[in-house]
Length: 305
Image (cartoon, rainbow, N blue to C red; front, side, top):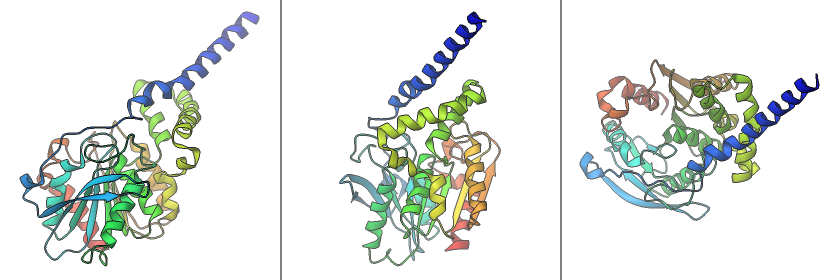
């Protein structure tokens, strides 16, 4: 009996040690570092644009590109993901939107390529980058009175939702493959390594503690799941692939369920397959080659604004 207890105690200690150390092993590859990304030239997309600099409330200068349409209906702020690609790879999205009457503001978020900053924030700090973009647009005579919509992919999608929760000047959000909160996506990813569900659930307080120590526990409140409480009736488009391996489809289910509970003005669209960007990765530069993808976005914009 004592031997069984001793073995059980040893296994429990080893499990707790594993759960404690896992974030320290995995997360440093993302945190406390900059990401230099391949840059794309807007001239290659034949855009009418100007490159500008945005200043955040915590004094970071961010690279951004303001692209223009004729007879604009409003502005779509475009964001990329955690570490790749650069937002400049989305000039194809901007061209598609410009041709359909929408200006765009592409923001390279902090700690990426031409923007200042020494570390990414998983959306917990990048929402300030979006607010800096909104501040800029509100000082622009042409854009200030027109709708502002934020469209992001992956972490950029989560950041879009968080920013809308913090800034009611944002009129709507297009969120492509967002995560509900980073601790949840962390433990969802563990499933790919065949870690049993009970152990995955046990990990959540440990990754939450790690992030709280790194960013400050108050900043943990900045997640897309919580931000929906502040959305009121602003339009939200959620898009997700059902077999997404980077941000598990359960994140879509969590956000959709929460939006239903709040009776939000939410439109959803899902696809079979594994595409994290919803669109095929090699079509990001030329999204018009996926007419369904473009029509989902344009119909949402035209129906709500």
